[in-house]
Image (cartoon, rainbow, N blue to C red; front, side, top):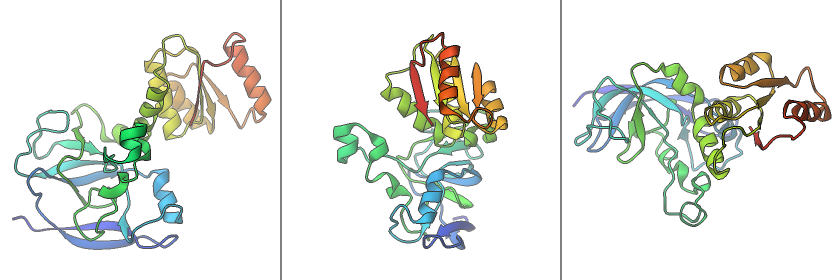
Amino acid sequence: MTQRIGKRAVLVAANAPLEIWQRPVADPAAGEVLVRLTHGGVCGTDVHFWRGEVPLPGPVVLGHEGVGVVEALGAGVGTDYAGSPLAVGDRVYWQPVAPCQRCHACTVLGDVSMCENAFAGVFGDAGGPTAASYCDFATLRAGLPFYRVPDDTPSDAVIALGCALPTVLQGIERLEGIRPGMSVVVQGCGPVGLAATLLAHLSGAAPLIVIGAPQRRLAVARQFGATDTLDMDELPDAAARAARVRELTGGRGADVVIEA
């Protein structure tokens, strides 16, 4: 048994400073994977937790976007969730917020984003094993989806999309996809908006118009495939932006609008 000690950032109460707890880190049990964190993304949901806008059961370790290096494999683990071979030292991405596939939202509505038990894997004992990402070590419980990061893919690129990319994937699924040649407007150029821009581009959207600010984010949107960008600082009037969209779409307007 390897003796490890790790730190974790714990939210003990709304609007309170995060506390840094130091705890022993156990070896992974059968079916589990122990990961040493290299990247922990900050999501707007973490801010909602900190502000007290979401009820918490007690102290929680924050963070649900993570990239790290496999520190140890539990018995029986030789592949990631997709079946790719896995070894100690490999980089992996995981998302500890997982639908239960048992509640009303999961089984009847078919909307896993509304799963009432999705945060069960995060809202556990703040001092015990955790899959959260604001910590030195994360324990990926048996059955939790995680994926090996290809050697030629930078970790910064993976964590930059965090849970924004899965959010947009579900949105586009609800749209029943974006067909080539559709005119798409993305309103917003934060992480979700940029992920939407990337996926709309890969789907063949044309024109692909992104509305937002500041300019540095709009520049990234253009790198991700936006054909046109509208800077809200330069074009603050909504009616003027709508007129510009109609102009860019030959008078038809947008086939798809993504509010991001």
